[in-house]
Length: 496
Image 1: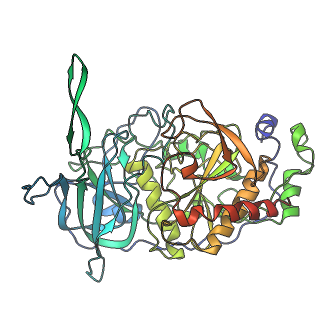
Image 2 (image 1 turned 90 degrees about the horizontal axis):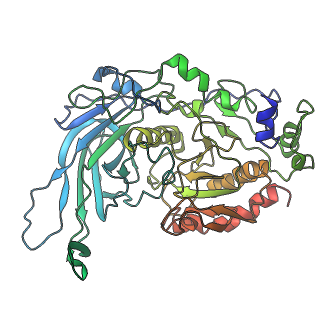
C-alpha cells in the first residue's frame, strides 16, 4: 500500500496482521432447471457484463449453461384482455406460464425518472411441488435506491426504472399483473394564452415494462459470454465484461488485502484491542495527524466477502469509485420479503446483485453492506470493506456515506435482534475508522432528491434511516424504530 493511499484513508488502513480466514462459507446452490419451454418474449441473459467503456462484441452463450452461471429471463409485459368497460385503469401483465427456474422477481421499465403509480402483483409456482403461491406485492417506489442524479452511474444511459426485487425461492412458473392507480391525476393537455390547460386522467403505466426472473446461479461463476436478447444477439443496452485477465487488475479481493488474505471468503472478526493495534501498526510510519490519538472505534465484526457470497465479478464495472470519507451510515431494507433461510442469504444477495446490474443497469450492487436475519454481515459494492466506496443506495446522499441493507421487509415485521446487533457492530467499526460518533450529527450536501434540493447542506444523524434523506418508507417502520438502539449500542462498542 502506498503512502499516498495511507494519507487518503486518514491512516487507518494498515497492513494485514496475518490473521488467517476461516474455511469457505458453504453456499446453497440453485435447483437445476426443469424441462420447461421459454415463452417467445423471454430473453435469457447470461451472467456476463460490464466495462464502463465501449461494449465489446461477443456472442451469446448457449442456454444450457444458464443454470450453472445464473440467468435472467426478461419477459415483455402485454395488455391484459379484461373488459375495460366502466373506466377501469390500465392493466398489463402476463398470464400463467412455464419458465426456466428462478428465485427472485422484479419489474423494470425504460425511464428511471418515471414512477410507477399503481400495484404490481406476482404469483409463482414452486419448483418440484407445482404449488402456486398467493398474490404477492412488489414494492413499486424503488427509485430512491439509486445513484445521485448527476453521477456517471446515473447518466450512463443504461439505468432503468424498477420495482424492488422479491425473493420467492426456487420457482418454475409465474403470473404477473400491473394495474395503474384508479385515482385520476391532473395532466397538462395544451398551452393557451392564459397558460397550460389541465384535465384529470388516469396516470399511464411506464413504457417498456418487463418482468425480470432471476436465477442467482452457483457461486464463483467463471466469466462467460455476453447477455443476449431473445434472438440470440448481444444486448446493446448492457455492456460486456472485460477479459478475465483485465478484471484481475481490479480484483475485489485485492481491495481487502489489508484486512484478510487475497481470495479470502471472510474478513475475520477482531477484538477492540486487535482492531486498534491493526489501525496503528508500527509498520505504518505516516499517519494523518488527527489519527495519532487513540481512536474511538468498535471491534471489527466478521464480514463475508464478495468471494464468500459468490459474486461473479465479471458482472460489475471493473473500476472502483470512492468518496473522501464516511461521515454517515444510511440503514435500508431490501423490501425483498422475509421468506428466506439464513443459509439462502448468499443466493438472495447474488440475485439482488444480478438485478441491480443486469436488470436496473447499475455498475454494481447498490449497497455497501448487507445483513441477514441471523446477523451475518456481507460486503456489498466492491472496492474494499474499510474504504469509502461510493454506493447507489440513497438518492442525493451517496457521497461521504455508506448504505447498509437488512435483507427483508420491515414495514410490519420486526427485525431480528441479531440483525440489529450486527448493524451496531458494523457501524461502530466502520464509522470509527473515520472518527464518527454513532450518536452524533453530521452535515451532508444533497446531490438532489425529493426532500432536499441539490447543494443544500443537511444536518442528519450519523446513523440515519433511508427516509431521513428521501421521502420513502424505507427501511420500514419497524426497523426505523430500532435505530435509536443501534446508535447507543454502536457508541458503547466504540467506548463512548
